Length: 272
Image (cartoon, rainbow, N blue to C red; front, side, top):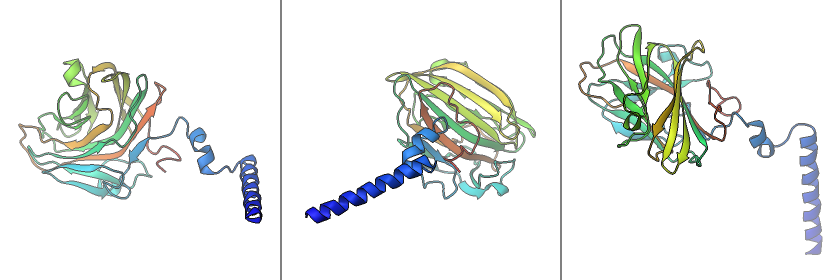
């Protein structure tokens, strides 16, 4: 037993020396340096559909219209070169289709920030009446913390809105944005209490990097910090079928820092 114990001690000492040598040479094991080297670009959860629509925990929530996983080469717009697949929402009048995330990232503590990011491309036909579709939202039932509202628009542009509707009344971000272009939607909720937060949102043209608009200081009074849906809710009245909305590069981050926006895909060393 004494001899075996001595061998274990020698082996352990050798392993310790190997780790120290690797650290000194700048080749620290990933487990030792991950938190430090990824500081400022860490993600708590992401889904870029590289393998499927559900491999990272998303659940199919509504199935009345198709949501397909397709290569980015089959979608309109110019997507990030390292993003291989997106989700295609094929529009069906007054029919919903959505995927839902629940409890896949940590809840922010009071004072912390929850950041979200998703790419969106509206390729619906000109004149399509979506009824102000808001299938892209925080949670299912009222009160809804926040939602993005997508209108059909004309051949070149459409109206995109963001609001914490149940709490902020008519105050919202409302933008005229280009159609068949990849947009980057980012939002931030600072938790101010057990079930309250202050919300901000930004919209970028992801193809050019231009900031198209932002809003801050929206109030929120609900506790769905770990819930999210993306898709189309099939708002009534609608008067068309066909055309697609494309979704990609969904990510969430919890942070102590107010300016820790996730930014473009990919977050280096994490998503790719």
